[in-house]
Amino acid sequence: MWARWRSTEMRLTTVQGSWFRRFLVLFVLAVYVVPILWMYVSAMRTDPDFLARPVGIPASLNPGNFVRAYQMADMTRHFGISIIVTATTTAIVILFASLAAYSFSRLRYRGRNVLFGVFFLGLILPVQSYLVGLFVLFRSLGLLNTIMAMILPNAGMGLAIAIVIMKYYFDALPTTLEESAYMDGASTFLVYRRIVMPISSAIVITVSIFTTITAWNEFLIPFVMIQNQRIRPLTTSLFVFATRFSAQYTLLFAALSIVVTPMFIIYFVFQKQVQAGITAGALKE
Image (cartoon, rainbow, N blue to C red):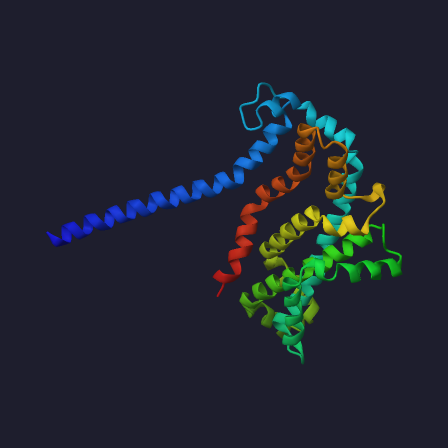
């Protein structure tokens, strides 16, 4: 009798826990998804309809707001700037982070742990703590109002987290193939290029996605370093657009939707690779 009662109690507890987990997942999804859906729906409404019922069911949808916002904000130019900055930043981070991470993981030299610890400071220090010094340095070098004034800080900030992540991933990789290559006379760089990097595609994609999203969404660096309207990226051009059309809410939502949509697409396309890159290091023996 006791065993039957105990079994029934355990089943009830399991069912209750299952329902609680489902509710928690649905709640988290609602917190993140509902505002995004509201943004896209609001972007296709008319201003009178939005002002009358901001969170209600729209009376009609007007996809032409996206075209108007794109043209009025001159987004073709700013899209190009953002793509150049983001692509260059990501390429720099992947190249130098993979080299540094492999060095920290496989090579043995004096001061290696101290130098690796320095990169942890990049994870702790906020950009605001060194922004003034960076501005003075770039001004003395004549880099203000140039694309490099956005690429270099973005790459510097991305290198810290990328090196740490890739170093621990390389630590988890088996060394059998590398040892065989060394026995055949391969150099360290050849082993890195021909063996380590091809089998590390998961972490490369993961770091690339994170770096791309971070560089694309960066606002503070270009806001401080760039005053020339012609080379502003999408984030700061959106800020200028919002100050000019602050009363046209649906246009603002349309412009915001255009800016964030590319990153949504990139993440959803590569989400399996990102998840694999995050967990692969922990699963390797």
